[in-house]
Length: 283
Picture 1 (cartoon, one colour):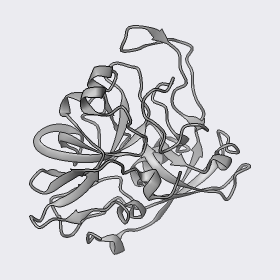
Picture 2 (picture 1 turned 90 degrees about the vertical axis):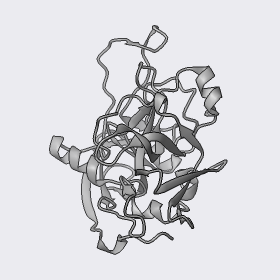
Picture 3 (picture 1 turned 180 degrees about the horizontal axis):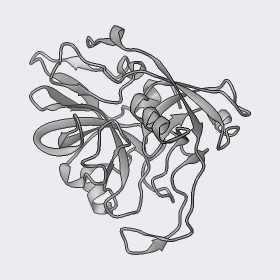
Picture 4 (picture 1 turned 180 degrees about the vertical axis):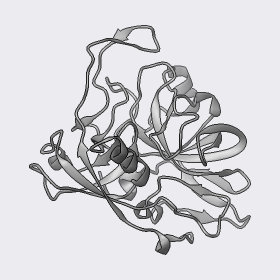
């Protein structure tokens, strides 16, 4: 395992609640100029979990599993910033009280996976606690690699390696060119995610992304996501697919950043399958 400052990290209990879907009653105009009204963000999505396909759903930024929010704006920001992928979650109220889940993504909400039978019992408004730790994580042998949103639980199973050339080597299922990066550029890397514009079927075929799944690890070319998300030639960022395709122009499939570095410090290798649902034993 790659060396880190894991022993220096603190664990913080952060309370949240299951969000409720909202609707203003208007149509969204999609990339194809057609008005539509589809299930969107928030709530509990029982049949969309990590490991499911990222494309082909009739939804708008479909968030898998439970979408959690803070009890007020300050607490919501704390939940967004402090939670990391792989962190453990415990339900503290409702029919599913005591059930354990796992943080798998970030969007407008923190996204949490639970077993299917538990998801069927969770309701909007139910309380939960995230055992948040991971922010401040550093890879001590790779100081040029910035870590974001990566929980120690996930770090230990990612298969990271130190190469003979001193570069950190990371397995990914695909590499995304900078031209597909959309909404989220310019935002903080600890907040929400960056959308990848994959509306064009020919582009999806060209990039070999037709089978992209929620939870897949992907690389993003020419992306510097250390303190915000920006174009930076010669840099690479690695992230996890967090939510399904959204129809709005400039939006798309969400990717949560976990690593960012100059190409001289980070290398990716293509593998046919690497998904956090498999790595964490979720589905």
